[in-house]
Image (cartoon, rainbow, N blue to C red; front, side):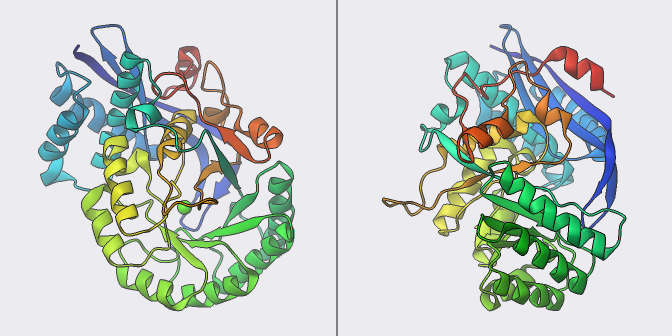
Amino acid sequence: MKITKVKSHVLQYDLPEELGYSQQYYSKRTCHLVEVTTDEGITGWGECFGPGAIAVANKGIVEGVIAPMVVGMDPMDRDVIWHKIYNLMRDHGQKGMPMQSLSGVDIALWDIAGKVTGQPIHRLIGGAHRTKVQAYGYGMMLKRESVEDHVARFKDESAAILEMGFTATKMKTGLGPEADVQLCAAVAEGVAGKGRFMVDANHCYTTSDAFYVGRALEEMGAYWFEEPVAPEDLDGYRELRAGLKVNISGGEAEFGRWGWRNILENRGLDIAQPEVCALGGITEYLRVLALCHAHFTPVINHVWGSAIAVAANLQLLAAMPPMPGGLHPWEPMLEFDTTHNDFRDDLLTEPLNIQRQVAEQDGFVTIPDGPGLGVEPDRDFIKKFEV
Ligand code: CA
């Protein structure tokens, strides 16, 4: 069996309303799918993390740099292919966009391996430790509106997300430490007695501002405080984790086992959030997961993008071993974006219907058990949105 073609599909549409997080506002939804074709008629699908112009540039890496390295290779040789690509790109990108590009290709190879063997990816990894996983719903994005309007909207939206059946919800901050504490208080009120809430700063704080917000979060009982400071600020993470009672989470902007070794050995994370569509694909995710568990750091995958990314993460969440285990073990959750996303809802020939599952199954989502990712994208839909 040989790889005959590696193609990127960048899909985009205009969002009905602008959304924001602590770093920027955005008005387009983008996703980057990778299609790997073989000489035996089996096609695999993957996804690369990275919005907007990043996706367009990554398409150049996938098709211009990676494809010529792997066409003609046997797609079942996933680890051989991974190391060939990584070693040839090493001098030009051990992190960032080259790794995002490699990720989409690697995920597609796992999809192919599943289709060749007739097994879902979680069985190729070692089996299902769980057949369903709880989802948390994130929303509460920033907008160009006053602090008071944010406060009112965040309170209503957090309550509405729990009403949908999610047992936890996650908000953005980024208006400045004092306003942010007001937003967090609004969400704490919105979810009171009904579920947990988490706070995602997208690394907008200095360490001292993160302490200010984090101390307020301790009082409010937030479950985790995500990316409080810049991913490069390992000292900041370590100080915050040692000094705050709220869980410190992060890692979505880290790549590969060597980067992860550093942030884990630094002891700055209570919860690790690896992004499979960025850090190097499923092959590298499994090594990063093993490193996290070697440090007894629980993992809740970062999830962003289309239904392909959601499906890949469901496979990984099924195959994640309990850590440390027990009668009532600590369980991971599926991160689920509740904001407008046609690529999550309408891309597949048979949709995952996550929101409906959450509503009907007490917040749980069933792991797909078809071959590979267990889902197939609709080619007509891809054509319609491809840029
Ligand atoms: Ca985040």
